[in-house]
Amino acid sequence: MTEIQVGLLAIGAGPANLALAVAIEESGNPELADQTLLLEQSPDIKWQRDLLMPWARSQVSFLKDLVTLRNPRSRFSFLNFLYEENRLDEFVNLGTFHPFRWEFSDYLQWVARSLEKVRIRYDARVQRIEPARDADGSITGWTATLAGGDTIHCRDLVVGGGRDANVPDVFAGLPADRIIHSAQYRRRIAQLPSDAPLRAVVVGGAQSAAEMFMALHDNLPNSTRTMIVRSVGPQNYQTSKFVNELFFPSFVDRFYDSPAEVREQMLDEMRLTNYAGAAPPFLDQLYTTLYQQRGLGGQRSKVRTLTEVVGARVEDDEVVLDLRDRTSGKVEPLHCDLVLLGTGFDQRMPAMVRDLADRVGLSEVSVSRCYRVDLGDSAWGAVYLQGVNEATHGIADSLISVLAHRSRDIVGDLLARRGAGETRTA
Image (cartoon, rainbow, N blue to C red; front, side):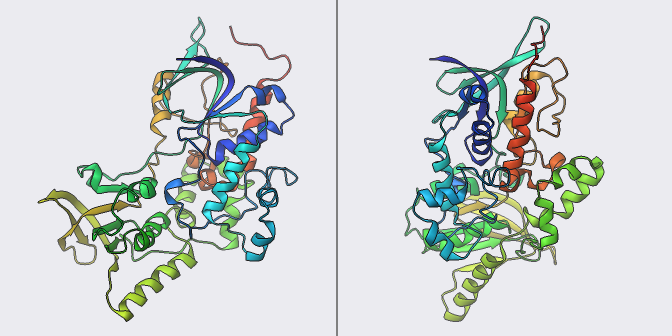
């Protein structure tokens, strides 16, 4: 077991903390860069690794990469990645703003390899984080304990590991081997025989559910596939240019300065821009697939709309889902072998953040405009949260759209706190 000291520890090496790492390297403060460490629980970096289907595309323009909106001249841009990898001509020839998901994942790996000062440690799963306190009780830093027993001490902490999977209560009693959340899809499907004639049910109507439903046609071609959608049907994302201005980094200020009740109303009105919809071309493809099956015969896929799951259990080695028709109220059983959940992520603060708040003694977690958790004026060590601040910073907070500017905001706050004349609270 080892024990190390760093200035800034960032948990997670996904897009958020990679964008932060780049901003730190470009900040002109080599000391901060040398003292920054990213922890990644996996052996490598992949973006949405369990939904990396070969045909899946990013829904965000490549110009909203880790750096371009903050520094268009950065060597860490997506276009420079394509140039360095001799893929720029071919990408331009595609005529699209939306790269394949695997391509953006390749870009993230390239960025990680291209960092010169900021370090990344892989296979590093954090078990717990505890505050370090001075004699008067003020927070002086943090200690992270890893799964292998190593400890890392830091002054400042950034949590950027994303939200926890949302498994609705109705499915809580199902055995783990009968249920797959979208955050586990590829690794779990790979464990099943590809020729297995399984009865698979996908729950949800947004992008992740639709992607799993379509992927099953390739991954389990002998299966029957049913998609359960509570609404009137899978719906397109809201993609008008007027609505897309809500994803501008400049909108964060307006959202943050709004009253709490207005922010809540705006989030509800913006649901179809991200959470509850799917990409229009992809829904066209899904509908066409169903149409072809009906016309050619041998239909093995169906979408049941206006239907909700009100019960789930195992009987005689079968999963039985109780489905309620919202129009008639009638409840009937559906027998299946496997349930796949496209139910998104828990909108509470991640368990790691809630645990840390308990250890610090916070009754609630609130963050500043610069994403720093309010720990009181006496705290010398800080915590920054990435990707979980929709309630205060808007729906784009969990998306790539604001990464470049958010990194600028966090780095600016870090440097301001390390400015000339700063003294540690005794």
